[in-house]
Length: 398
Image (cartoon, rainbow, N blue to C red; front, side, top):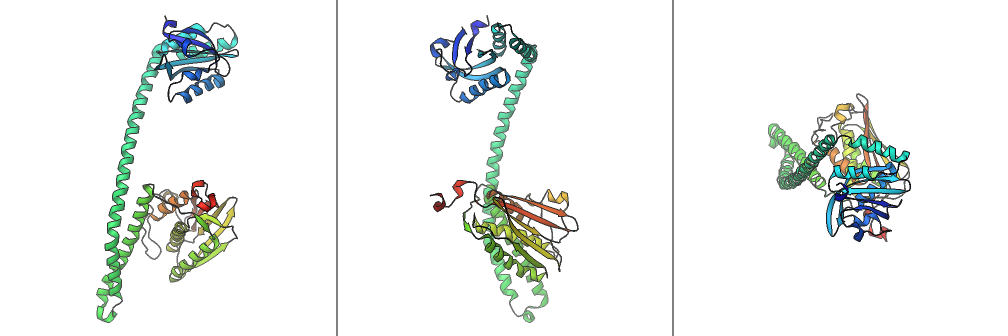
């Protein structure tokens, strides 16, 4: 009965047909001796058919694989089982998994140690048809859950894109009025302090500081919205990393002087690198700015650059309060890493999120070492040359 509802064939070691042993699907017309078994694979099923043959080769047998085969011009989903028999492959198939396994047992006629071992493996896997049915039911439930999860993931992706679009629009609309408040408050603060009066000047200082902080927050929100929506674009160009770093440190030394903090720069000679210089400056401003923000007056910040193999590595070390392990786990998450500096400076909690995305966009990585009470050191490592050939400037790719 089972043979009438399935097929059984012998193939050579490469999966080419040697003999049709049983045929209820008209294989003889579709698969002649010498033709590969994979010729039967339906559209999109070739890879799975090859994996089925590979498992037979590596494991000695493959039990109950569901594969789409083209039979008599129609695509059918069949349950396939196969095994090695001496130098050949025995492959059986049926529309029902139980029948396929039973047909496989019927066709195992060679009484040798290899066949007996395969029979044992088969009996261990299919000794209880009720258990097989339960596995099939659970597998179907799993497939349904995976399908539902895929739908939910697609919906979450859509909502996330909508959130990023809204965030970008809101931040963009807030930027101009905040800039106007900052400009006008700064203009009023330049007035005669005697005529202005101490109380009004104090009000203006609060307005100016708050609008400046909000301006930084809006800029960070715009950056995050672009990055999260996949719009981080890196414009690679040759750069003198030593000169770029020296320029950035020089700018930050002006800010460091206000807190009486020294900034030491230690670099080694490097070849010209390919990177997005403005984006890297954004990274440097954030990391060096954070080091200055959380360092006490009279302390020292050390910026170091060196080469490690095909990468360059930067470290920014401070003598600040350090960061606990619990805080470290939050640093690179939006709105969770914000802390006040030693002079009361505010943080948006977005800077390190942006830094991490920019570094990873360059194919690099960022990490830190910190001891509470002794300071922190941030490290970034970036390839000297882009790993993605599409990132190369056109003249480089010719």
